[in-house]
Image (spheres, chains in turn brown, red):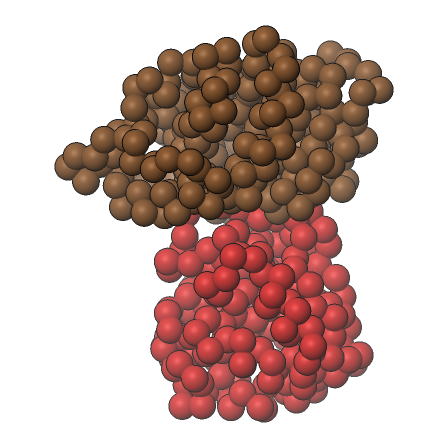
Length: 286
Length: 189
């Protein structure tokens, strides 16, 4: 067996070449993703696509255009749960939505929506607050495959119990089952929940501001990014938000090392809910 | 192996009691970071940190995203996230799918730590009811690190240390109360 140090060094080169191929062949820049998770994901992607090595995966990424959606799916945000971290959704319901209610039109951007579990959770919150008919949720993701699944709103029903508990813990006033129909071990969310959601592809590593938002949710997405890319995203959120707009990140995320964090003040520090401070100067990302 | 630069510890069922014994026996002058992945059923890792902090000779805290693995601190993987170490020794978290039905997974922590510290890493597998950690310990050993496994006969739940022994083998296999003294011997200059 070759020494593992050689093996790891070789893999580091392979990973670098794969990232270059994605950039130059497909225009997707993963160079600012945090390396430890990136390495795991690329390795797993190679396995899933039956490639013996990352180099083989790189070859396929270069030659098979049709593979791109699968590559992006494997490299983007993983699935979540409905009402994941119930205290966060409770705080959104009780503290944030009442303030958003003063706007005639409410725009919400969920960045990195994956399969949409949290998008629909948000739609339910808005519905129950009586705000949904004047709200628009922009749900974006890097992966077209993920967006397609999100738009379907169909999930395995084994998650239903946990999601119901989450919904109740988040202060839900009805039964989560009111919002879906279950069949063939699947649950399908009510089509009506989708009426004010726009699903669109957006790459946080390269794309720009596209809407004026009152609330941005981006939970457990920036954890996969290096410090500079995390900072880019925070600047992007700042520039998207209206004055006094809200930002909600994942519960274990740290913005301690990001320059742009200065533009946000914690509303609920433990829940990672922030508000754009009013003196922040909006600048277009360069 | 080189002078150890870090210690990683994995445990599951029975882990709280085992960690109390381990952490209360460590020399308070230990200069390495001690990173712990313990599967718990609880909502947050804060309670576990508090319980362990009462008996540990070293300060105990949850590993914070993007922060550094701190020398002389015991840092625990937060509940619901995989804990990884980046090449520059900063922590990263992930919500990628469970590994061995677990998130945090010991394999994920050990594998990323092995890539950072290579032959300057000590891995410890304690009591538990799954095979998590076996794969990671194997990688750690192949990278030149040192593997310590609690002897299954003395573990509250022997499955995990047994799986580690079967899959990865060990440089040391001993009863729980012998592990802290061994770490002190290996890690103090």
